[in-house]
Amino acid sequence: MEEIPYTVEPRPDTGLYNGKFGIWMFLASEVMLFGALFSAYVLLRTGAQAWPPVIPGESYMTAMEILNVPLATLNTAVLILSSVTVVLAWANLKMGDFAKGKMYIWITIACSVGFMVIKTIEYSSKFAHGWGPSTNNFFGIYFTMTGLHGLHVVGGLVVWLYLVTVGSKMWETEPERYTNRIEVTGLYWHFVDLVWIFLFPTIYLL
Amino acid sequence: MSEHEMTNEEIQEHIKVYLKVFAALLVLTGVTVGVAYVHLPIGPAVAVALIIASIKGSLVAAEFMHLKGEKKWVVYSLILTAFMFLVCLLVPVLGDSNYVETGWHNPLIVDQEAAAGGGHH
Image (cartoon, rainbow over all chains, first blue to last red; front, side, top):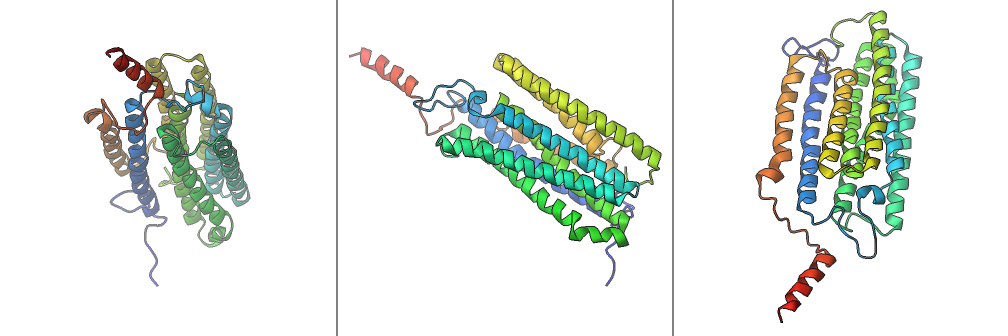
C-alpha cells in the first residue's frame, strides 16, 4: 500500500502538512457554525422585550442572577489551563520527551472531564428549578450554545483519550507524525477554548 | 511554525511565552468578571466584555494556535472566514430586527395595554 504523502513533510503548494491545512479548513467551517448561533443570539436578544425574559413568579434582572457565574468562571480557568497543557505537551514531544508529553495530555483530559462535571452541576441546578431549553428564548439559546460547546469538549476528550492510549504507539515508529497529530488536535482544542472565551461573557455576564 | 526544525532552546522560549499567556488569560478572565459585577450600562458593558474577549481570543490564536508566523494559506482562509463571520453576525441588523415574534408576551406590558385599552370605555 502506498503511503499517504505530506503527513510530515509540508506540501510544496500550501507549505503545510496536510493535517494542518485540513484542520484549519474544518475550523473555518466551525466558525460559521458557532457564528450562526451567535447571530441567532443577537437576533433573539435585540428582539426581546426584556433579557432574560420575565418568568412569572421569579424576580431577577440580569442573566448573572440566574446563571452560576462563579462556577462558569472556574470552568473558564479549567479550560484555559487545558489549553496550556496542550501546548506544553506539544512542546515536550517536539523536544523528544514522550513521558512528559503524555503527562500533559493526561492533565488536559483531567481538565476536560472537570469541565464537563462542572457543566453537569450547572445544568442540574437549572433543571432542578424547572428551567430547560423550552422555558424561554434565553434558556433556549443558553442550552443550545453551551450544549454544542460541551459536545465539542466531549469530542475532543475522545480524541485525546485515543491519542494518549492506543494512538500513542505511533510515537515508536513515526514520532514526528505523532507530534503533528497532537498539534492538530491541539488546534481544535484551542478553538473550543476560543469559543468559550466569547460564550462566557456574552451569555453569562451581559 | 513546525515546518522548520526548532532547536530545544527555541522551544524553551516558546514555553516561557505559553506560561505568560496563561497568566494573562487568567488575569483578563478576572477583569471581565470583576467588571460584570460593577453593572455598567449595557453599551459600555458590551464594549468592555467584547474588547477583553477579543484580546484573550487573539492571544490564544496568535500564541497557542501559532497563528503568529503561520503560512499564508491559513491566514488567507481565516481572513475570508472572518469576513463571512461578520456577515453572519450582521444578518439581524441587515434584516428587519425591530420586531421578532417570540411567542412570549410580557404579562406586565400586556396588563398595561389592557388597562390603557380599558380606560377608553
